[in-house]
Amino acid sequence: MASSSTASSSAPMGLGLGLGLGAMGGLGLLLPADRDRDPELEPCSPPRGVLRLRGAVQHYEWGSRGDASLVARLAGEKGEGRPCAELWMGTHPAAPSSLVDESGGEVSLREWLARNPAALLGRAVTARWGGDLPFLFKVLSVAQPLSIQAHPDRELARALHALRPTTYRDANHKPEMAIAITEFRALCGFVSIQELKDVLRTVPEVRMLVSKEDAAKLLTAKEHDGGIGVRSYLQSAFTKLMATSKEGVSEAISKLKSRLNGESKIRSITEKEQLILSLEQKYPGDVGVLSAFFFNYVKLSPGEALYIGANEPHAYLSGECVECMATSDNVIRAGLTPKYKDVQTLCSMLTYKQMFPEILQGVPVQPYVTRYTPPFDEFEVDRYLLPQGELATMSPVPGPSIFLVMTGEGEIQADGMSDEGKAKEGDVFFVPPRTEVKLHASGPGRLQLYRAGVNSRFFC
Image (cartoon, rainbow, N blue to C red; front, top):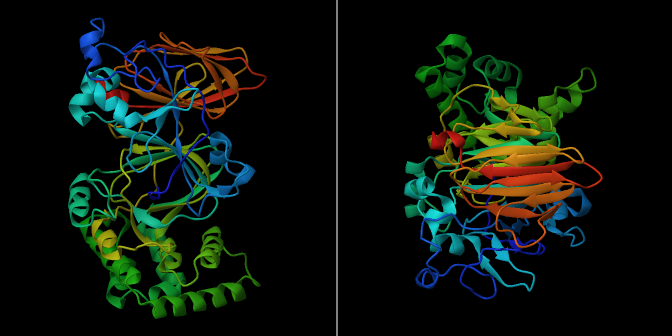
């Protein structure tokens, strides 16, 4: 979701690389010159070993703190007091993961992959995405609502990066998927035409900021007419709302608060109205408070997921989740934030589709393993829930994977690991292509892991 260039490395997790490759700073990493000295290792031969990684923590203000933050617990930062919002696992230059040995030496995962991408990422992945990991894996601990935002498609990302590279720092698109760890709340996509009509009829504070002409067109639109016509009316109405002056927004919000406080004495206000009042407390006078009426209010139970494509509006509100996305940090914001707002770009880029987001339950792929497959080539996520004493095996796949141990203790076994393969809460592993991985839950409770990898459908 949110972006920032500020990151800190999580606590060292130890490293048993077991690659048997040329040395660099004690890490046993392959340098290009080493190929001449090691005839057994061709540029496209499978690498030997599973690597322990150190992720990077993002300390955004909306993050949870201390023991309340899953990110802090995973990264070993519970006692620091700073908000721990996101744990990044991947190669994005804003916060790349590192390979770390027991003496503290490290090299960035991005740098290491670039030395032999065909072997470390796989031929197909390298041919499609070059020498970089195509996905970015995260954990989010959301204590306060994030901004009303959207992520650009590839064409817009390239244009924005060329125009404002300090704000839009890469040229990639950013589809994403969130899997709830706790109850997870979000705003996502535009409400149906019927719900929007209800808003225009019952929320005069919103209707006063939308032109009479647009309101009339939306109020007379048919449910089955949700095509270009309705989308153009919705775009016009939403753009007018978002472009309202600060004074106009403050006046409308003041009237809304006064009306709801009065009505709450004679009726139960709706969940959406409760949300609006809560947002206003955190972001007084922000147009994002009013825009929330236009969006679907989504509540995910643990284990449920939603995916968000390019040019779709959304805002995460609260809870903890695992998130995976294409490797990008492009965010276009328009509300619920003190950061830079690019309202014109956001309003012009949105698809204005009106539908409730698809909620993924995941599909069992073997005992104790559930797969979440979004409609994007870059990534998929597997969830492993192993009871004590149980085993699970990940068969070799043509692309790379990253494993995160969420809770519990156990062992991870793969060819080439020189350490004992102990796996505990907060451990992160990079698994090269064509590597079989065996997982064993040996602790007193359940072993919960998440695996991010390239979407299996890409290899079909």
